[in-house]
Amino acid sequence: MADLARTAAEMVAPGKGVLAADESIATMSARLEKAGVAPTEEHRRAYRELLVTTPGLARGVSGVILCDETFRQCVSDGRSFPDAMARLGLLPGIKVDTGARPLAGAPGETVTEGLDGLRERLAEYAALGARFAKWRAVISIGPETRYGTGTETDTGAGAGLPSRWKVRADAHALARYAALCQEAGIVPIVEPEVLMEGSHGTARCAAVTSEVLDEVFAELASAGVELDGVVLKPNMVVPGRESSETVTPDEVARATVTVLRAAVDERVAGIAFLSGGQRAARATANLAAMRRFETPWPLTFSFGRGLVDPALTAWRGDPARVADGQRALAHRVACNTAALTGTYTDALETAHAA
Ligand code: 5MM
Image 1 (cartoon, helix red, strand yellow):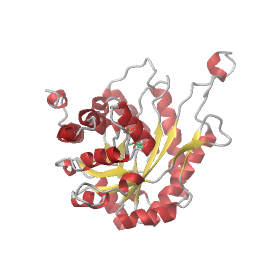
Image 2 (cartoon, protein in one colour):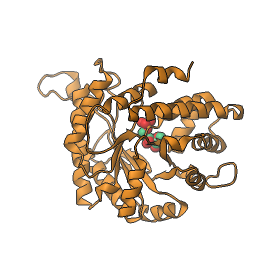
Image 3 (cartoon, helix red, strand yellow):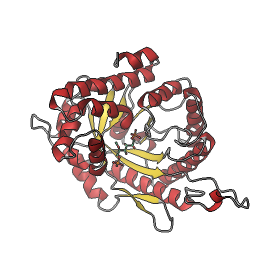
Image 4 (cartoon, protein in one colour):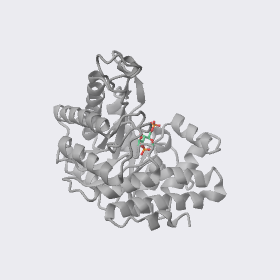
């Protein structure tokens, strides 16, 4: 167990975060197409090589999460991605869930799958060099039910979601995954993501995030998961994308830390936020604002889009623009590292564009 706790502490070491580059083949292909790049296996590989070989990446990034395809690919010098990363001082991580599928008994809701054969897959990933893993549950917030008012939102699609059954099913799967990871000597990133899609306000996001985290920690306890060998990857508490509510980074930080303090066990090794589709600079500003609050665990980033979107746009599949893509990623890492150390400013944010 001491090894797991050491690895988890390394993942959330001061001034460092985790890069999520584990988009599934379908998601990565869609993002490449949107950027005007043909969605081939070689482009997915080349893009991930650009990311992990960014000069100086390990100064602000402790580890990188990859998907199965990338984990088995090689960088240009012939080394496997996990080997190349280890040499670059980056912990290799692997996404082991197989995605969200419709949940029987919960119309319109999903459960994240991937437990079948997971023990064997984890043993193989450990042999290939995986030091940590990730499993993401996705929770949608539907319109609030207001029984008896006769309005359309009472019974409209998704009203009242998430259901208890969905929350329990995802929490149970996360705990079984986490226990299997620890058995294999791999640190689990536990990611219950409450999505930003919807018109709900901050209060509803806070209530749903609390409910989800309470259930996750109850299940982790039932499964005997050692919390100092776990990194939690939650959403920030923010209003839905279609909400008219506006909030400042300080308000996001206060709402988020309040929920986490009440729900997250103090023994957890650290908390690494996802960006959730927020604008990259906004996710960083929110993270910077979290520093004003004391917490029993280190807080950091495990952004996907919030780190890599500008790099993909700068690269656009052109080998001559690899250095541009790497500069864009290095800039986002520098901004987020500054957010962690209290040196994030508007000037730093705009420095790269200038
Ligand atoms: C990088 O994207 C991850 C994999 O997504 P799919 O399995 O849907 O292809 C995703 O789990 C990501 O790690 C989290 O959503 C956090 O990423 P963001 O972009 O929200 O920080």
